[in-house]
Length: 215
Image 1 (tube, rainbow, N blue to C red):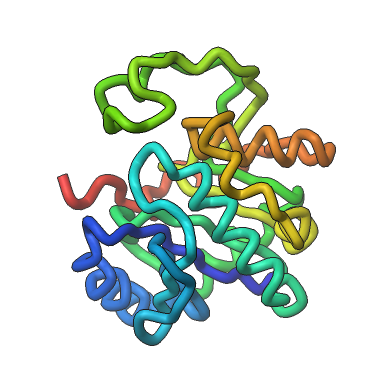
Image 2: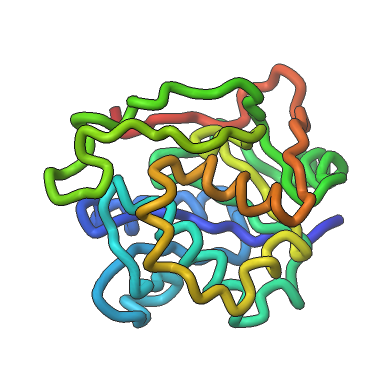
């Protein structure tokens, strides 16, 4: 069975969710994981919680995701795990066990897999009124290109090969000027590496995951 490392994305605004994430990890015996937030310097906040040197706001999620994958690649995590499961801080499980993980493992046949892959352009102004006035995206539509991308809200998976594409990535501060949608930014980066997304359906119609649990 493939070794899957869990990557939880959080922020300081909702830092109280760290405790909740850890409780879910223990409840469902999810295995190895890290929780990431952004901040002014890179440091370990507590066990399994890493603050990266990157911006931490909604409009800076592309920068944060590149920082996360750069951190994992540079620290050699790809040498010890087969896949990296990106999970938002508002996702829980209805059920999880070794059988469900084996079903997932058997479906991870590509380097970039998602439970939901989108192929049509999204709403180019979706972020407007959701960013601060000092953001480069304030009242500015996204007019860049679209490629097929895995929906991060539904969770997605990167292989060790895909993760290592972020090794020694030094253009972090420029990301915010080119991209506002983090899932698309990841897909565009991987597209340049000839790594397209693959939609998978490991559990058929069984509702294994619960989404938006904080609403």
